Length: 634
Figure 1 (tube, rainbow, N blue to C red):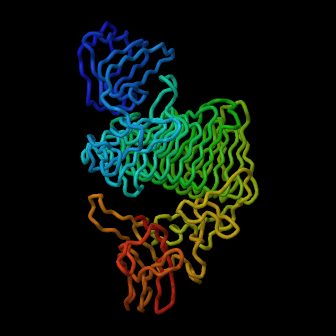
Figure 2 (cartoon, rainbow, N blue to C red; figure 1 turned 180 degrees about the vertical axis):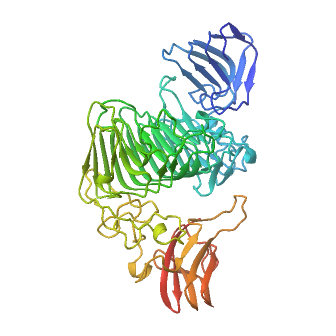
Figure 3 (tube, helix red, strand yellow; figure 1 turned 90 degrees about the vertical axis):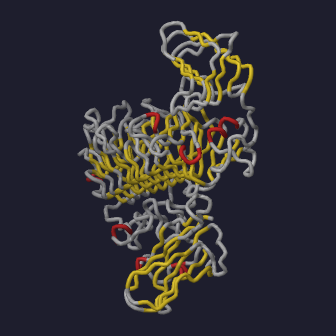
């Protein structure tokens, strides 16, 4: 409602409305609205991202009186009031439509929003209703358990985006089997508050185990980011895939003000529009820890005004200088195959990298693979360091194959000189290949252990390699065992980006991947004397996921493929990580050629195997010639 006159609301009922931005009743840009105290209004069971039922913006609305509201004691999930000078606001409610539940809740595609939601046997259908019903507790996170399945507006009446609440966890059954589909019309997950909003920001929440597809809308911008976390603090984002999402210039995963937050196992790929991942305007004192992040094949969309692509950008608030306690740590990062074009003239004179660190804080990037990114901006390409960066470290990383530049250091607008430290990394072109743009106020310190060589990625060495991780290292890669484990105040994660042990033996590799994975298996068993990818032995899909209950049939399986170089007796056996025999998947005398066999996730007795890592071995005429591995998720 926007009016410069006087408006009286009397005897209205506002319910069941859905918005991807403000809630049902949005009051702004005018004088106060009078709520009749005799013929009362009702406002309930609406859905929006900035106050489901009521948003008051830019005016001093001192009082609201209603008969029935969604809940009797609403927080900012239902009412958002933001104003530079927050007055003594009075909200009078006679009745609540929903009684909040101080317990975990359950959601299923086959559920019903009239169920209790208190058990898997009586699940709710929509995550929106679960967020309305749950009673947050600042002393413990309450969890909304989301069963496996595909969730969309058309299939099961989902109201997107899911609007997150403080002290709650939204947890899918498994990333591969719990899918949120925006149908190219809706954003999927939002947590939006405001620096000037009523109360503290949305904080202390968790989102885990989802695949997000078709999020966003090319005809909209801010409101249609697939994952948008605006002015939020202290969150965990874990086991999330974002793919096939198309936005009008906005990041696929975007956050503003992170507090002390953790992001793990985030994969953002095959999207168009703005950046794959973007963090900006962070708090003046914050700590962001990101582990196992994969940002690949994010490009501009086909609309000239629809975004200029990019992989990942981190741009904290332009505070100069910022405190040393504010830091971003990223370990096991892959930024590959992303593209930048359509850069607006306002920005085109600056280096635009597919990994940009631009703001004033302390950065530590460990075991990153930044490769095969491109830009039409002649000063952009791979990694860009600039704009208020005070202290940045790049350790154990590979920056190779980016065009037109691998690393660009741009002019800093800060008054304090910045420093960038590069050590134990493979940098194409070496120190002399770094582009210094406009005499930057940042000193690059070229440390020990740096090399300039071809990293020998598997996908480059073997053009027929079709595995999920083409940027894994070949056995002969110069990046093998070339990293350092001597990093002060740092603890390496247990696994690399592919889920293999991060440290193999007594040394560590450069880049996001560790060669010769599965150190829990004896070397002689796993690889013997052959290279792991001879005979083009591989499987797809990987991981292998049980698909029951997803409307895709009752099958489960992965296709193991290989090439016989000459005729012979071929055997493919499957083992668990303890070296125990699971199943013989292929056994035949065959002429030279290409072969494939489906493994349906069962053992010799037809029983479905447990979740975990599995190894398959190819034998030719009694000799083991190649091995591979896959992950099975039950």
